[in-house]
Length: 80
Image (cartoon, rainbow, N blue to C red):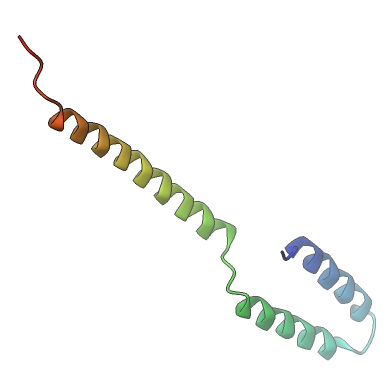
């Protein structure tokens, strides 16, 4: 897949090398190009992933509760 840490390291190194040169515009252009690339990849943030994971977990728990309740309601009555 895509290693975000590698891209961050690459960007940091490029920034470091370009900071001491008159090529500051190249850095801006590189950042804009990388931002465009990330936008096209349709990525989500870690926070968005964590929120959706929590929502899914709650939905799974609720489904289990409802399945258990339905099984009890559908079970034949116990003889007295």
